[in-house]
Length: 387
Image (cartoon, rainbow, N blue to C red; front, side, top):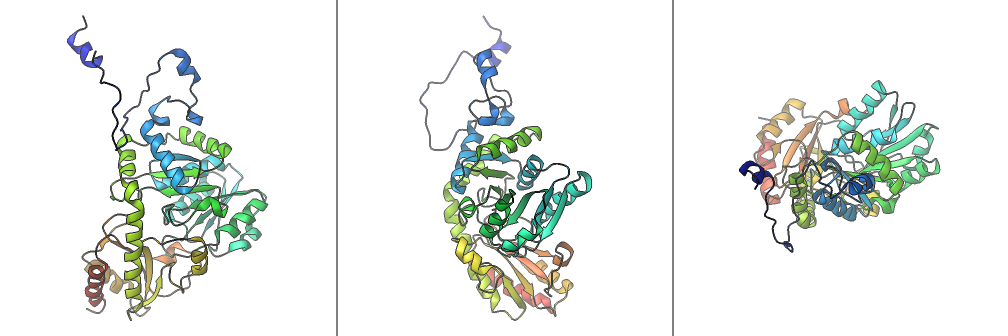
């Protein structure tokens, strides 16, 4: 007879088979138990044909990866602990010392920091291009260029690039294209139909929807490409916890409905701001005067709740800071995609070379509140500009 302590660790009871429920199961595991030595030696973590160790996947994470790949129109997906981790995983999988990577000037700032780090410490040149370059990017491709990043649209300045033209120019020279597709959530832009090789997203945003999970994903259609990225995933130890994966899966069934609500609310608030004398320009891809709007109309089927405005140049940064501080429903914070509306002022001149626009840029994330209440909040805060 087993001792009490051993019985706690090795119980005789096994639950009956056949349980099925609507929510996906949460499988917690670091160690994976093999039925025999042959199974242990025969598993291949790179192709996901067996479970080998919790870091390489469980039924919970494999299920989320399959769902994200399906949403994006891809075939393979790998999860990472954040969007930035997913970016880093792609860079470190595909770039070597002596290689070159091209990034748009409107790139997500941590991606810029990653590029600068690669250039400073790893001997990988990182160069920046006009996000509206389109086919003209061919002039920047060098023999050692291995990767081009695209952001559609830029998550602060909102320019929409010509993704198919960039992909065509890149592929003509054997260069891979990675797209940050976070703004569209994979719902409003089909990356692989436009020629993209790798789609990266921060699942922190609309997929989660609760502003309580950090996660990223990398999706491809090519087996050889995902195997290269999987090696970086393994070497960097890019594990994702089962509870976080479950939270994201729980948000997926309502994602499209939430995204459409964010879109409608964002357009309503942006249209109201467009008529305000304090605002010099609204940067929203669905609006005709936003750079790249015609490309948005061609390639996108919707818009996120994220957009920016430029205040009239007569207002100083101190004045626009007072405006931001006076907002009540809009909370000051990074990220987007949750139910709560957010606001963030940016010093674009310090982030973006060649930025010619005057006026302070403020970015709004429209959540799921009533747009009329959000407009009223902005209206009362605008009084702080001159107080």
